[in-house]
Amino acid sequence: MGFDWSGTGDLQRGSYSNDSIHAGAAIVRGGYGTKRLPWQPHLEAEYDYATGNPHTNPDRIGTYDQEYPSNHNAFGLVDLFGFQNIKQRRLNLQLTPRSNLLVLFQGGSLHAATIHDSVYSGAGASLIAAPTGGFKSDDIGSEFDASANYTYHKSFVSNIGVGHFYPGELMTSERHGAPLTYAYLGFTYRFKVEY
Image (cartoon, rainbow, N blue to C red; front, side, top):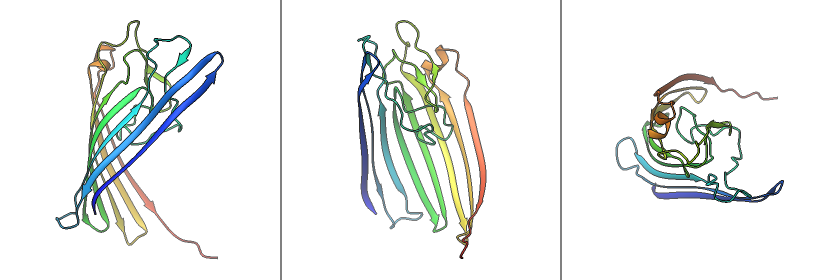
């Protein structure tokens, strides 16, 4: 396995009505995995960034417009936040105890890219609007997730996971300070139809 890395970047330019658009986003990942150790560990560091609007120019839109209506597991399994005005540092540890069992642990730290723009939901709507003068802190919070995928005879797949969000100062100072835990269990049966 060895070292691996991946990355993507996106610039958004154009105009909306009389305003110019200057936004962008980037995702960078790098990791190391080995098959020589038990459970074949793969450790990966990730950094995600999407611009927000600092409101320094009233004729310029700086908030990145996320491309998809949902960003499942981009910012944790709890899926509270969208890919707009956000930056994240995340560490992933993937273990493969057996060829049909995969276990994943993730820990992430979430921050606003600028304190003068909203915090956005996974659907791209404003979740918490920035007060006049901006938020007092850019610390949205942190999250820890654990999940597993088990495949039985290539047909029956079970998924289980739990995610917990710990609100940061930005959330608590805006009366959104309740921690949130999300758990799921799912089963899938795969089959092939030949005709």
